[in-house]
Image 1: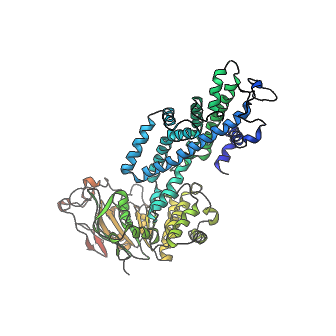
Image 2 (image 1 turned 120 degrees about the horizontal axis):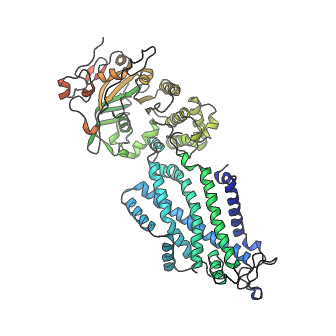
Image 3 (image 1 turned 90 degrees about the vertical axis):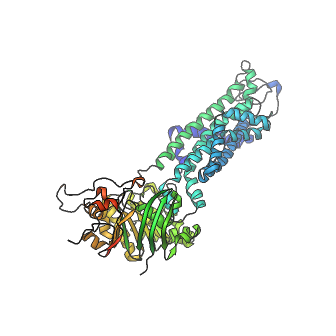
Length: 279
Length: 319
């Protein structure tokens, strides 16, 4: 059985994984799950607490909070996941190229990466959004660039270590060329740690996306995002606290779930022991 | 028969440091040449030179020529040399524990060699792989081919590495200390398998080892390296009966034998000097019991001795 499934069978991994699957399914089938539309206002029913009609209550425009939360999951997850995917892809190419070719390319990449590494992600993201302009595309690019350094460094370090392994020497002495060694041996071996780190970074990216959304830089109203919903709720903390509490909980639980499931995955993949020297 | 692999007065340097000097060796088909010496004597470097892999560690051939099948390796392009590796020369690495890619199934790792070098289809390559595994006495080859490297024992992995070396149907195998990392019982099996390859397939085998016992078991000829120079070379029988070079004699003295009295196993005092500080004259003289003033001043030339060659001012004679 493959590792992601085995991670689900661990006690903590199972609960966390279940939540993630639930959130992903909700995001995928959002329009089918609720009778309400996320953008239709119903002012007479504004500020409703939890009831049979509105399970999580309504916001200041009388929109169903659960509906907006589910659609918000769509925005948050797709933006974070896409951003991290772009980041991983570019990071692996850059890191592999730097480690493989060495020389001036390695120096330039390492220096640039170290430079961006010294700024907090949120600062890089804010600067980039300011340049590109608010909206989901801008946020996506900003998050992708903010995490690029991490994956470039990780891939480069992995490939540098692997390059010295006996099996690379063995493959080369049996006539394998550069491309074969890079794509068939080095990258596949570097993949598992990079993917796990990508998974954990997605958790951080959700928070970053919510933060940018809170500042009004993410998805523009009326499209809901978890950060945007919290921003709207922040002025209503005493009048209708649920408007900020529920999206906040969604972010918190999802990020914690990603971290717990990620830990279970690390244990299952047994990343460290696979390169153990004592066989 | 003409030599398959021939090293003719080869000198190798990394940067400005000369590591090998005047190495002349040859191996024929169906023959086992044992390349012996302590760690640091230049055995693995000789193997790298024979495969044209020196640039990888920043080394180069400074003197002489390496010829494979009569062709000068220095005159070949890198693409031609790459075709030689795996197709004509199979390589068996020192440590089987780390010689296999941990994230690829066993079968695929052997398949890829014959697909690359013999242009076989996936299915034909797999059939060849299973055939090779069976020949190497790997039980239940089909299920081992689906296994991951970490599921196999050391001895089994070394057989897989040998199967990889054989998959390109080479004329020659270079085995760099193939048994060093294995249990004694498994060592014997691997040596047997390698010996059988030479007998049955007629491949040439360059067996690199520091274990004279292993050499005594399978080698037709022996070449002894010391500190980057050839100490002695010749047919195995006469060398074991009457070694000319005191270093060879000392190595033979290190083989434990049945019924030996406790404490009678002799070691060699001292260590191989590093390439940065080779002593003048004969490089073995600081550790040699026969050393004279001549040895301290002048390096002995490699001269014919009995059926082979030796580089010693005071060669031993048949008792």
